[in-house]
Length: 402
Image (cartoon, rainbow, N blue to C red):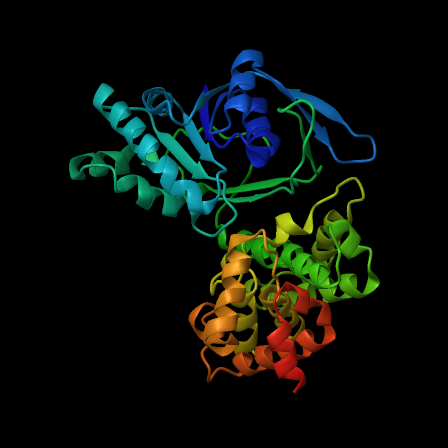
């Protein structure tokens, strides 16, 4: 069996690749990094280490690679595959859509009755595979779209594994947390699909997606933004601070109350899930940089993402949101000069004003009560953290103090 995986980075090599290889697939990685691609082609294997006390290590076998620029070869690999997966980031899906479309076209043109192909975007977002489908179909002519609908599926999935930025002497070596979860809904699969070993198959994905988004993603970025304001450099350093740890727990208790209300989760079971997730953040065998987890604040602050969506839903249901408001405020203060989105966010706040940014960027209109709550929390946070003035907040702090 053949699999094509777009993205030879940390998630691809540290999560998706090992799962597919363990299920008997020959995995062809498609990426941009010439060194990693060359090494995968030459060696056909690479090591993975688990970030546990024992530092368990295993070898991922039966792999190869292609450079994304080798478009004809990439398209042919897609045409011959049983499954195609991605871990490139939502914004990069557009960069691979053309190659996937060409692969589908080759597949359809070579056989009037092709085998089913499942294309799965293993990205950190809701509806990622459907977003990829829309991008791919832009490259297909209308007659091919109808044929593709009958034999190509784009099931949305939920994936979860923390893989921090890392450097090793061996460019292929990767260290990952022991925990992982990959959930696929059966309803979106085509008949005769071969199940992947280690994947959890369910009837409905919604509850799993939002449980992960509102717990893992919300909690992780909250720890990052709280930690940033306190001068921490890693998630582990932040979570060693009792005050930050309590605030992260407060955030997850608020999202937990929302999830229990929406999906009928058992409160005690969900509380155990929160405890497990927080222990993942604390993992002392990692050094997960704040800058990695906090990056791209505009995306994380978008209306349907991990901070605003649970806050707005919780408020509409009459549930507590004070810790979520604190996390949103901390994200609005994130000013890493090396982060393009952070720089843009601070420039927009400086020039347009926070109220306008809340309405336009975050989708919280001026008349919504959370708009005023965020404004008040933001003012308090600026006064509590005068060191932010060194990041370009001098005039803001002076105005607030005045």
